[in-house]
Image (tube, rainbow, N blue to C red; front, side, top):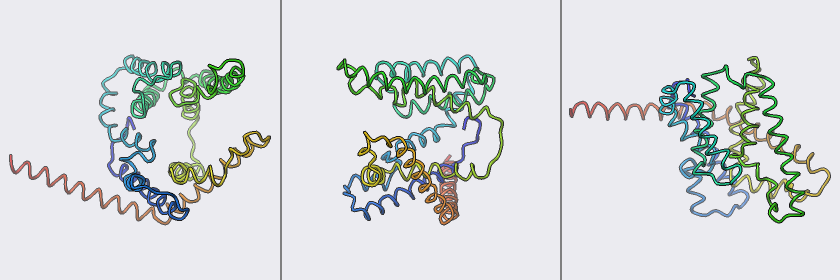
Length: 295
């Protein structure tokens, strides 16, 4: 987004998709006799405002602010951009990793940080991650240390009370290892030779829908606790295989649902978005015309 023109149609299109699945979740909740409260109903009627899907709300805010963030980015030279990224990493990644204190580095600051990291990689492709060995090592070491931290902490908790419950200490999104693994995977993808694949593009167009479906608060509890209930297989030898198969199955089913939505409601949604956009622009023009007349 750092080099793209801001388009309100894109925002409205995303909002329409979120609202579609929000209403669908309410309908599904009625089918499975979900215990609704007034607050729950309101949150699903206004999902973005009430952060029903926290990731989308944070992304929405970042998207709305992106034209102004880009002005700030354009004012930085490469050195200042690097320093800015390192300062944010220090405050919202390094310190929280070892102290568990976020320093107000919640969703929006973290999204801003990732935005600036992505913008740096976009504007300055000749960076340290251009070295294939470096990005591969960053990814492998990050994942390796994540795995080792769980094993080590689970072992130590048998001897020291301090380590009890600390086996997932490095598994939160503000963790240095999670950020390292994420940036490593991201750069491994963007520095590959570009190519076009229709199947991959079709699947990728469904991923946001997959997220909205299975991460809906109503669907999430029903899916993982009532249907899949992997927690009952915690000590089973097939747990890992079961986890992988369940993840693949959930992804496939949710992708099919999203494809159906695109085919049945895609054009209707686009027309609705266009209509709303035209009405908003007409209203803006009237306000501007009125002010000009008054002046």
